[in-house]
Image (cartoon, rainbow, N blue to C red; front, side):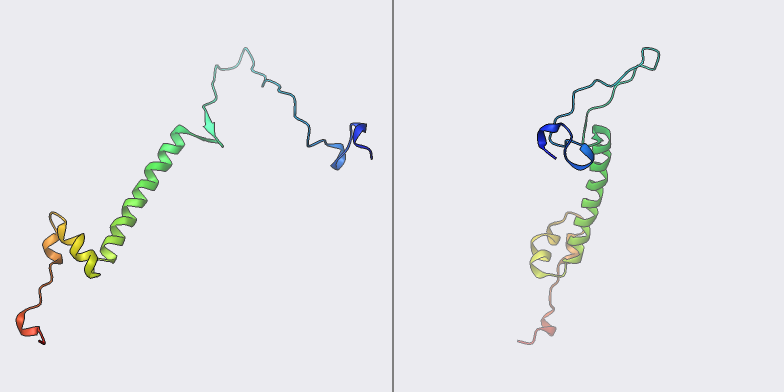
Length: 101
């Protein structure tokens, strides 16, 4: 079918043409509402709630990673021993009787 006939594409739909900009009908008798600004359906309130949840998971993951790697000597010396309250728990001194040299 030729392109200039007005009906082309699958079932006569022209996907390459721009649809006309129609305004959505708003009844004068209905409630006065406004649609919130969003980005792909996510508005500011939802993004804030999602951000707070992800921040909580990030903090929990970071604390887990610190305590998981706390037996690595570099992490224990550079990070864990410098914590204000529990830093003394990570000081490991070998007594002279256990030193093989």
